[in-house]
Each structure stands twice: as structure tokens, then as C-alpha cells.
Image (cartoon, rainbow over all chains, first blue to last red; front, side, top):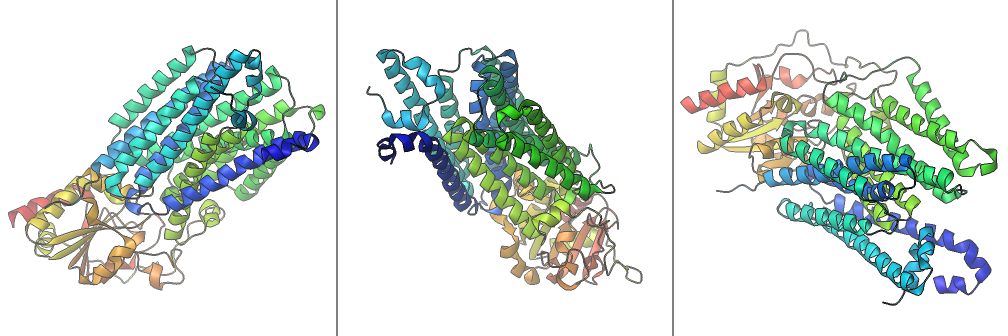
Length: 111
Length: 497
């Protein structure tokens, strides 16, 4: 599809960013559908671990924070980045550890 | 290593151009970009597999280990990014965050899970907001470029969702930790104030996205919008009561995810978009499930407290009805000789931290030949699945905890329904009193058991302020006192029988 756009230079210049934005929208919508399909199958039993797990995963903001903290754009952005890295890491490390601690407790009935 | 036209086209960052001065640099940069994107793709797959693990309790731990591995891969991938010039602050932040995160998760008692989850949403949202601010600052102040409409919209959503989640989650934390009153906080013109603030925030967003740079003031408007978002977070959560916290926590979960997704749009990062979408979907589904379990719409939970003081329900007149209280000895005998007991735990069990005593009592009954099951209402407690985690902590096997739909048919066969600190979720008014505020809410059929024992601190009505006919049912006996001490006495008594 991109090749096609490049063959029309005028169009390509205008359309490329738009195509990219749309590709991202596709990714978002499709990931949302996958999320919906999986999450509806999670039993109520595990809803608390589910929430702390997705919370840990949303600590993925760390990826953006790392660049902000290390890019040396300005003191201001380094400071913001540093705080963001700390906050996101608390989320990630704490989230995965507490989820594991919870899941360890769920045991089947044995006799 | 050939250069990768596909990646260059789709993912090239402006900064890449600086490094393509010589052919050697181009190849290196191509490889670097390939590794980073590869790590993100791997992380996305691992996150999805990890969440899929949660569909079965025995696969869940393994799944979460996959997800954690995905996070590690993504972080390592990011660390080789050419834009990172200095690792000092990154390392310090990673160490500090890991220390705090680990400390919280090791020493925090399981009963504090709802609070921890709430505050953790605030941390995630804080990170997203600060990255958004720093990104905006870089584009406008450092580079001095014009920010495109799409990019600005993404940044705007990122800081709006982020900032309102920060304060919203902090308010939820305050309510759960009882630093703030659990009851709704209301004041005159609350609805009007909030709608006004929403409108102002939306206008600022539109200005940022649509107004040409020449009009000026973008930086001021941007920071004002962050402040407005923070204010919205406070104002939408304070009028929501403690019993509705399961919906609020789920909603904040969803918003934190959407903020991460918006960050993905702003930075052109698919991993952020995917992880955020998964999180957003999860929180959204949970909030719908919670609202449905209370037979209320989203809007009703969010705006229900406005202007409608908690009404005393239609059949509130308890005058003339009498409750029957029971002694520990009688209750113990009833439980000890029962062949089928269904325990209905509620928030009161969590408050009294009585889950261990419940398990002990259940084991004693089972040793005497009876069968004990646990009936879990979706909104029992303060967050989705709250009761399950507490009972699991006390070593109750998970196959003994049954969801409402699975167990409701079994109540008529139960000799005893033991209600521990639950109220609205067993209130028959939800089924047969049209004037009751909880009419239509699905409930556990505890009233259909042959007999009912209710452990209750006092005769105060439940959170919704609604009288519960179940307590006046001739089959019902009330055992007054703190759940934990009542259960301890019951355990001792059953042992001596």
C-alpha cells in the first residue's frame, strides 16, 4: 500500500502521516477487541488479580518515561522524566509482585 | 544487515535522520530500530498471552510471569534507544521505583488490596501525564515546531485522562483508606459545577488541537487543561459513596490504560497503544459488570449522588417487625449439625478481617461431615473479586467459591445460610419491593435457605441505608457482635460439641 502511495509523490506527502495515524488506530481498535475477547473469559474469581495485572501492564508508560528521563532535552524534562520513571516502576514492579502474591494463594480443593 | 525500508517508512522518528549521515550509521540505526521494534512486538504478544492465562486459575501465575517478562523485554529494548543520552536518572528512577514497589507489595496486608490498587492507578497516570507534559515542552519550547493536529489531540487525551485519573484515584484511595468520609460529599449546584468544568476542559482541548500557533497562548492553555483535569478527577469521585467504589476503581483502571494508549499515539509507539487498549478494555468491562451487578447504569453510579439524598426506602418502617437474636451456643449447634452450609461474605468480613476464622469454622463443619460453600456476589466488598482474594488468603480453596449464578439454585437445599457482614446483596427487597432503591439488583437467594444466621455488628441499616427484610424473616437469627469475635466464639463452641 505504501509503495502505491509513493508512486504518486504529491499524494504521498499528504497522505503518509494520515495513513500512519490510521494504522495506529487499527492497532488500537484490534487490540481493544482482543482485550475484550480475553477479559470477558476471565472468571469473577480472578477479577482482583486481573485488575492489578492490567494495572501493572499499564505501567508500560515506563517506556515513554525512560526516553523522557534520558534524552537530556532540558532540566525540566529530565526532572519530569525521572519522576515518571519512578512512578511507572512502582506500578510495574509492585503490580506484578502483588499479582503473583495473590495468584499464589488461589489453591484447588484437595482431599 | 540490509536497511529496512518498511520500518523506516512506518516508524522513522525525526531524530533518526540525524544518524543517517553516513552509510555505516544508517545500518547501525536500522539494526537498532529493528531490535527496539522487535522487543515491542515480543512484549505485545507476551502481554496478550499473559492476560489469557488469567482465564484459568491454574494457568494464571505462569501467564503473569510471561507478561512480566514482556515488560522486561520492552524496557531493555527501550534502553538501547539512540535518543537516550544519559542513564543516570533512569537508573536512579528504576531503583527507587523498584524499591518502593517491592516494599509495598511485600509488606502490604491483603485487606488493603483495594487501596493499593487505587493508588497504583494514580502512579501509572502520573507517569503518563508527566511524559505528556515533557513531550509537549520538548515540541513547543525546545524544538519550537508547530504541533500537528493529530499529535496534539493525542497529547491532549494523554494528559486529560492522566490528570483526572491521578486525582480521581487519590480520592478513591482516600475513601478506601478512610482518610476521607466514605459517604458521598455533596454540595449545591454540584452537577452544574461539574458540567461547567467538563465544558471548559473540552473547549481548552479543542483550542489546543484546532487553533493555529499564531493565535498564541497554547502553552498556558495546555497547563490550564492539566489543572482542569486534576480538578475534574477530584470532583467526579467525591460524590460517589464507598459501596460504589468497585465501579470507580474499574473506571480509573480503564482511564489509566487509555492515557497509556494516547501516549502511544503521541509517541508513535504501537506497544503503548496495545498495552493501553488491553488495560482500557479490561477496566471498561469490569465497570460494566459492576454496574450491572448493582442494576444501575454507569451514569447513575457516577452522577447518582447529585441532588438525591439517600432516601429512606419504601418499606423502611421496621416498626412492628421484630428480629430474633440467637446465642453463640445455638448458632454453633445449628452449624455443626448442618449437612449443607452456604457462607455469604460481605464487606463486613473484610472490615473485621475475619476471613481466617471463617475458614477455620468451615473446616470444622466439613470435618464433621457437612459441606460448606461460599457464595460471592460480584459487588461484595470494595473492588471486583475482593472477597475471593481475602478467602484465598485464608486458604479457602477456590473451587469452593461460587459465583452468584452458579450458587443461587443451591440455596433452597442449604440447611444454613451464614451471612457475614453482607447486607444489600442478600436483601429480598431487590426482588419484590418496587419502591426500593435497589429494586432489580441481582441478589444472592440467601432467604431461600432453610435457616439463616446473620453475623452483624448492630441493627444499623446497610450502606445504601435500606432496611433489610431478611433480618426480620422468621427463619433468620441474628448473632450480634464483631464478625471476628463472633466467629472465634463459634469455632470454640463447635469444637466443644
